Image (tube, rainbow over all chains, first blue to last red; front, top):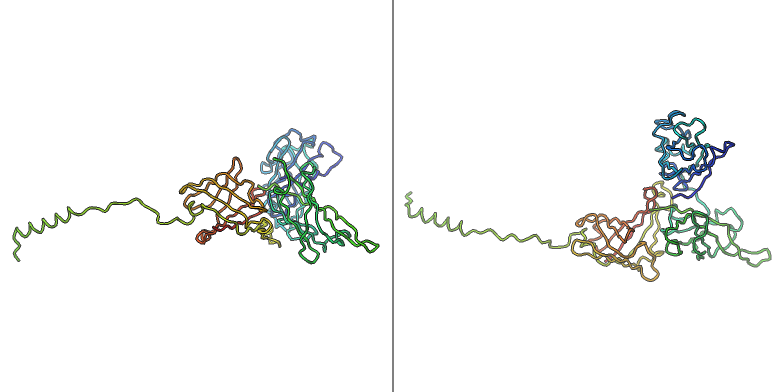
Length: 253
Length: 170
């Protein structure tokens, strides 16, 4: 569910900094329903306060408005999900009443109903993914996947920006599962690649079926390193490894 | 025309006897002549996996490329056996055998199954303890041809993110 941690914009006012923002899905477009989770445990001026409210201005201030700084509108109230943790669920295009093409980012802050005395976070900015398909050197099918899904991974060397990935002859890939705290789950597995021609390669992963995942463990990320050979300066071949490619896993139900 | 009393008595007697001799046919209880398509009985049985497709709902909604992939070979779905036992119109136990090399499509492989409507099944729930896998039954035309289409949707924030379409044959 919660995959990407984005620490809020900091300023010199330490009592308003430290909000941790996570989104589900990790990457979202203007037409996706996104759950934005805000943890204010480290925001001195908001710890223990409730209810909390969104104050947003970019890409606009949708009806019925934020209210006044001294009294936020009820329509902006966040949903409490735990101590100092709140969620804000929106479809950006519907929420702001704007065409998807006009929404490239969201800017907001979180405040108490009465924001006087700096009872707020610093400004927070989230980027909104464009509503066009952007080819990439590494991708998965489906784009949003969970640990219980069949995941097809694709490498397109034509789109690689590093020399090793561009020039290597890939043979296999090492795969690691990573949990929410950044630790590896289970052991690294190696998969042989299938060539799809034109310097494109794929392989399938089925995390639940192929790795030992302890009950209750959430896998949040998959890391992939491609292994292969490359011509050495002396004319022979040498073993090489690509940079690590990552895909975030969603908490699909 | 002269009709004497004797003739009238004879006619009335004949009519009375005829009426008295009439008896209603015995009403037999309703018996379905055949299994109704879409009922529990038509879905129960042993099904063999045919094919599986995986659809990226996000790509479909945004008209991105790479919307659907056939994952039959990856899952080795043709090795699957899905057994749905029933007693009349009441669903009973189920078992999923993925076969050697087959990859599990369901995290649970045995338990009980339930339906939303015993005569017109729309949804099948495979249940084992607190785990439930919900499958939507596809067109009943498949059942006429001894095929069973099931759809499973994986949700993200309550919205369909991935759709698996399974087809089985009997």
